[in-house]
Image 1: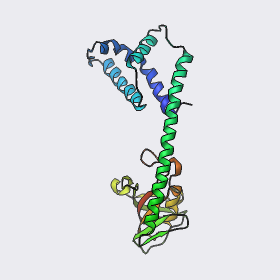
Image 2: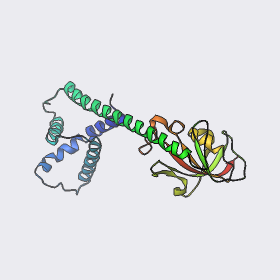
Image 3: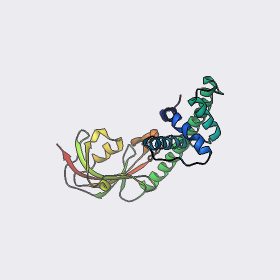
Amino acid sequence: MQSTFFKRTLLTASICTSLLACSASSQAENTPVKLESEAAKFSYAMGMDIGTSLQRLNLEWDEKALIEGLITSLKAGDMRLTAEQAEAAKKVVFERLKKEAQEKQAAASSDNLKEGAKYMVENGKKEGVTTTDSGLQYEVITMGDGPKPKATDKVKVHYKGTLLNGAEFDSSYSRGEPISFPLNQVIPGWTEGVQLMPVGSKFRFVIPSKLAYGEQGAGPVIGPNSTLVFEVELLDIEK
C-alpha cells in the first residue's frame, strides 16, 4: 500500500500536470519562461512544489519520459502504458522504497538500542547517579525543599532534552517560558522521574527507550529506540 506521502506526491503531480507540460517545450529550447503574468508566476510556483515533492523521493528520474507522459496526458493522446501497466510500474518502485525504509528503520533501531544500553551502563557507574527498578536513571543537580507531585498532578517545569550525542531536540529554556502539563500524560520516564522531585529541584534524567518513545521514535530527530537525556527543573505543582 502506498504511504500517505507517496499519495500526496502523486496527487500533487496530477494537479500540476498541465502546468508543467505547458512549459515543457519552452524549457526544451532552453528559453527562460517569462514570469510576468499571474498565471506564469502561479504555474512556476506549482512547478517548484511538484519538483520538490518528487525530489524527496530520492529517485533517479528519466526527464524525457516524465515530460512525454505529461504532454501526452495533457493532449489526451495515445498513452504508451495502459493504466494497469502504469500502476504496476509505480507499485514496483513504491514497494522497493517501503522495503528500504523498513530496513533503514530496523538498522537504526538496533544501533540506538545498543548505544543506549552501553551509555546507561557507563552512566550508572557515576557517583550520584541512581538507577530505579524500571531502568530510569537520575542525578540530583539541585535538591528543593517543596512537596513532591503525584502522577495525577499538573506540574510546571523548565526542561531541556538532548540525544546521547548532545544534540538538543527540545527546550523550554530556548523558548523562554516554562511549560505546564498533567504528569500522567507524558512519557513514562517523565511520569516516574518528576514524582521523585520536590518542588524547587533540578534533576538530570537518562531515560531508556522503553520509558520514552520506544520503537516508533518521535518526529525526524528522535529515532527508534532512542535513549534520551533530560534536565528538568520542577517549578510548581499547579492546582
